[in-house]
Length: 309
Image (cartoon, rainbow, N blue to C red; front, side, top):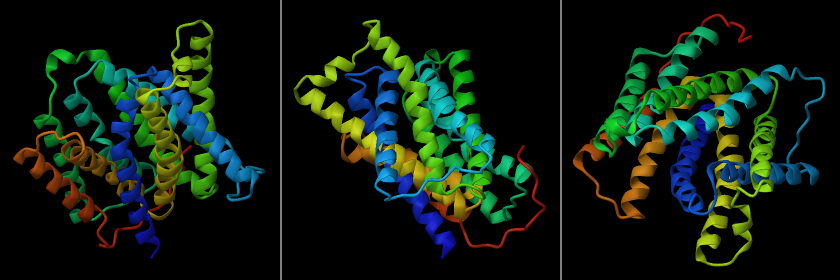
C-alpha cells in the first residue's frame, strides 16, 4: 500500500508537469523568464504560508539539521531552473529532451552509490526502455544542431545533474523532514532567489510585471498560467515528488519524469492539434511500458546505507 501511494504520486506529478509547458508558453508571451519564476514561486510560497497559518498543514523545522534541506533547495528549484532556462535558450528542443531524459539513469546510479539502492535486472530494463522512449521523442521532434552550442549543452547538463542530486537529497531528507516541510522550504527558496532579481529588474524599468495589471485576453491567460504554475506545478507537483520519494526508491520516483514527455506529446496532439507520428507512438509505448516495469514489485537487493554528506 505504501508503494502504491508513491506510484500514484508519481503519475500525478508527471501529469501536472505535462501541462505546465502549455501554461509556461502562455505566460511567457507577457512576462520574462525570471519574472515568471518569481511570480510562480511567490504565489506558491504565499499559499504554503497561508495553509500553515490556518493549520491546514504542519511545518516544524525546530531542532533539525538544516544543511541537507538547504542543499536540496539550492538544487531544486534554484539551480535547476537557472540552468534549464539558459540551456533551452542555447539548445534545440530535441537536444534538451535527450539530456534531461537521462535524469532517471543518473538518479539510479547516484541512488546505488549513495543510498545503496539496488534494482533488479528487469527494473533496469524498464528504466532503459523509458529513457530510450524519451530519446526517440527528441529525435523525432523539431530542432537542429545549428540551434545548439556548447554553452547550451553545458547548462542543460547542469540542470540534469541538479535534478539528480536533488532526488537523492530529498530522499535522504525524508528521514527527517515531511514532504510538506521539504516543499515549504523549496517554495520560499524559489520566491526569494528569483524574486529579488525580478524586483530589481522592474525597479530599473526593464521588467514587464506592470503589464499584469492590464486587462485583455492575453493578460487573463497569463494570470491563469501563473496560478497553474504556482499552485499546481509548484506546490502540488513538488509536494508529490517529495511524497513519492518518501515511499519509493529515488530511481523509481525519478522514472516518472519521463511520463511528462508522454503528457506533453498528448497535450500537443489533442489541445494544440499537432501531428502525431508513428515514431511518437512507439516512443509513448516505450516510456509507459518502461515506467511500469521499472516500478514492478520485483524484490530488490538491500545494501548497506551510506551517508550523503
